[in-house]
Image (cartoon, rainbow, N blue to C red; front, top):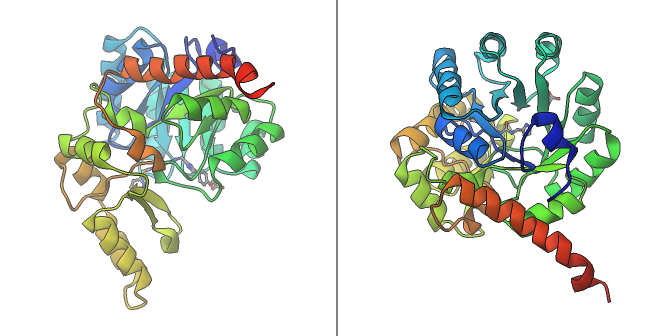
Length: 315
Ligand code: TUI
């Protein structure tokens, strides 16, 4: 078994966390991952604060294992969600797309393990100083909102800079990538895109089909000119978005308006004009299977690779 301090701290069997994917990560997926021995996460990006509260309550009925909530800090209801998770007795939080500083004191006082997602060494040092239990170092291979650095450069630099456990994310979908993340200094891994193909993932069937059809070059990053880069599948929507960004005649407000609600449309309606956020690994996701099979394939496979590495590479 891969030794990891994260398993003892969070009370989980395997050092694998499911990404808190906006609109997608609900009680169904989170409970399935937690029941499989990983850490399931519920996204705070849903149809409002009460909808997220309901997902948390539902998850408690589906699993007696630990699970957490991912808080998207740029969402307009972030402060409301920050309070609601305390009321609901959530014990593990991850945060994304910003600094969790404004909420750290209240969460810590409530005995919550806070695990911010960071994309730089500077923010890693900041959240460690603020009392984070651990952090997720997420490279730009990931889907959705991305930073500048990729996992192979980010992960070892963050791992060297901090003492708290580091969870590697971005570009991890199979046992080889998981093993590489552990070698780069990760105490655990976070996986998003691969879980889109889980049987328990309630994303629209059209979304799953686009992921299954994706190849290595199927994703694109748009939104850089708006200061909010996002990786998604190449679709007519992302092409139009990219064209609008390249056109000096189009105002940023028009582009923002064009993008508003696009992720929800893809996730809930399978709308071809929606935003299908996905990581660079989408091309490696080729079958629908239970979350348990995904967790075990990645973790048990990584263990085997790490065990065999000494004889495979050393003479
Ligand atoms: O948050 C994510 N990924 C996301 S959030 C999201 S929701 C959405 N986004 C766009 C349109 C519609 C919906 C989709 N994907 N990942 C975690 C993450 N956080 N990656 C990178 C960061 C990050 C980047 C900069 C964290 C902090 C930061 O700067 C903090 C600061 O203010 O210094």
